Length: 273
Image (cartoon, helix red, strand yellow):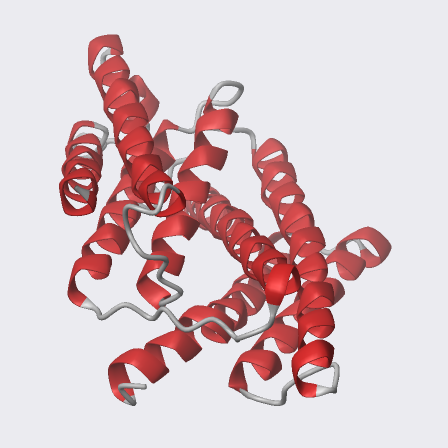
């Protein structure tokens, strides 16, 4: 059952990515015909609902929980799609749709080929569950912020060089509005990441008798938190904008990706543990 629902979501995401892609030589995907846009919107909604059903099957006990890197990526891009869907009700963000759907499809494909990782710390209890859930939610928000950041970077690059930006990532929004959305998502992601780290301290103290278990995941997680803290402080106190702020955002997001998905990938795929 899970494979069928997963396959349906994968197919619909690919269909949406194909329907919603910008035409060759076009930097304004919003100029597509209303019928094509509506079809892509409906297809993405159905893909997102099918994707949600894969998680519902886990909650209903019809599929075993998996704490591996591939399901973490799958849940992350499901949340990215949800953020996009809400924003698209208020802003013209059609240029992001094909990219998000393609990434979500790839994340679903990964769950088919990599072995499950079903080991949760024994006795961790509610604190571990909240740490994991809030951490993945922060992944989703930072993932959405990074996609907005690439859109902002492409628009600024096109403006300075007087040529089209990346396909599908044209300046569909005023740059100030796009920048505000990017760092609003980063701020909310930082709040959730901070809460996730607090719960990590709680269950680590309970299980190991110390606030942090010193490992790669902890190092990358704390390092990413520090980078995001510096970024937000720099924006609010020093007025950081443009490429400088984006470099901090991309660097912090890369470290955050390594902290859970990267460590799980190494354990599962490289070390087979």
